[in-house]
Length: 322
Image 1 (cartoon, rainbow, N blue to C red):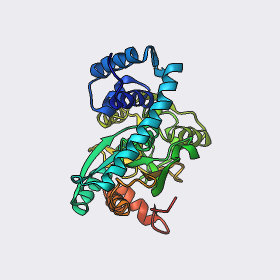
Image 2 (tube, rainbow, N blue to C red; image 1 turned 120 degrees about the vertical axis):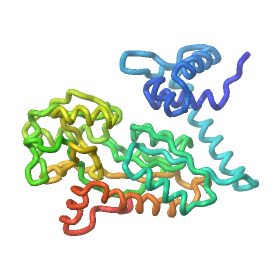
Image 3 (cartoon, one colour; image 1 turned 45 degrees about the horizontal axis):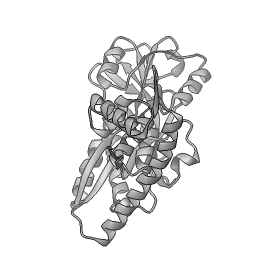
Image 4 (cartoon, rainbow, N blue to C red; image 1 turned 90 degrees about the horizontal axis):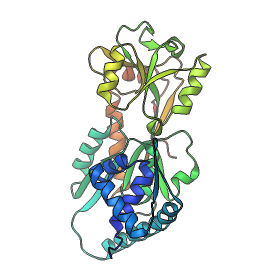
């Protein structure tokens, strides 16, 4: 009879975290058909279905919830065992696994880490949803996470983690150059009431509630016609008159711009998270300093953000401790 392995438990947890087999396959670095076949084998070993499949994704069955609860405990114990063993024995270069949501600082951040942590083997994992990224961190699949604080954040999301604020910055709007809503390099949110909006898929959108509240305060309900996180697709739609929310440091291609909203009605907070007392994470303070350097450099990417920063009475809200 086939036996259950830790890799099987990691696969089940990835499917539950991602809400779909396709997203879990991306996180695990395998093809969707391969993960689907593996999941079927796991279900045969355990004697029942672990997930109910539907048009919006998957959700755990009663058996699935039972297995996930035990899996989390076993994976956590294995993580602790590996950390303790590395402390007591010789090993090769320390591995630092960086998980991140799509942020413009990542390239410079990795460059800084490579220059400062010469004896560390770096690995990176992209995950579009901040909540899923926190789960990857808490279950030991990444060692450091760079993410955005998301609507609905509660204390239990950070249980067992050390979280620092890297920066708090305004959210800009991505818009076509020459759009009638642009006035003196600024856009009033109310002037976008008649536009088609592009937003990330709901599970990836950290500021969905805040965005709807800001639009309501501006006197309209946004007409969201497009859901995508893919920059090329969004750029094509913006060129046709649609608009989107944008990172302040965005440097769009010719014909498009990322501009501040009048009165800065929307803000986002960038977070740096590690597990508490994780012996495998080398030089955490040094890693955080690398993130600070990368963020400071990113503000120069977009001249409109650099100008916004100069117009503030003090420095933008950087690296305040959480």
